[in-house]
Image (cartoon, rainbow, N blue to C red; front, side):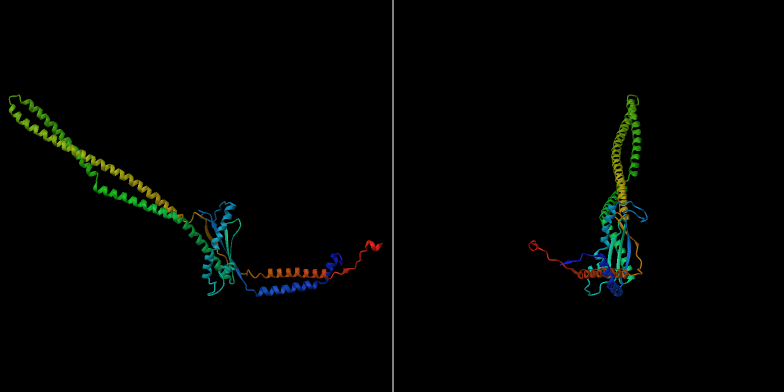
Length: 369
């Protein structure tokens, strides 16, 4: 059986004569979509914004030249805000889970939370969709603030090892400094230098005096030896013995004093050397302690600033209009779908009702003959 070839004018005329089907379908779709949209519960969406600050940038208004690859790497911070643990904490804080309910936290999270980093920016957006507008804004702000706090804690945890090592080095340097200071104080008490130096100076002065007296005594001995041959040699002999005894005494005293001076000088030199050594050690220990303490202060002051920091720049506003259901979108989609379905239906009806065309039986060569 053969059919008529497709005629566009006939098809358009067929649709025109049945326009009421299309209108009724679109009207029904309009009414149903409107009723369903009005009956569906309203949900509101609030959005909080977080700025991801580069390391070491204190003022968010400062512009920083960054590469697209760096901006793309910031998408990892979506995991902070989309953390299951953080969402569960927020859901419990705002009593979103009913006690004893069977609602899974995962399904609730898919309906409520949306986290995204705006492309080619350092802005992270956290959107919360809930039946109450104020609750949605509070929920989004809570997640944003907790996300920023979590980032700070993670950065501090990353720097905690460096700070702990610096604290240990500072304690060791302080202990060394205290030990050297204690040795210095002990040396100042048990080994004074000024008194010993004064004693050495006094001994040297006494030695000079004794040497002068020794010279005089030796001169007297020489004089008495010359006077022995004189007429009054008996007196000279008596004085010579006394002079020699004085010389011997002075020599012995001088030797003892010389030995004492040498011992005191050696002790003084040792104390001076020890004092200089302790002074050097004290300066080195003090410098080392100050250097390590400054490093510890720098690490403590800059803790959490060696990686990106998250800061809430917009806590969001209480939404005035519901984000769902979207009445206009629902009606538009329903009317468009009804239009398509009605046209498809009429097209199938048009194809089904095409009239068949008569045909001749083929004449074989034998029949013609």
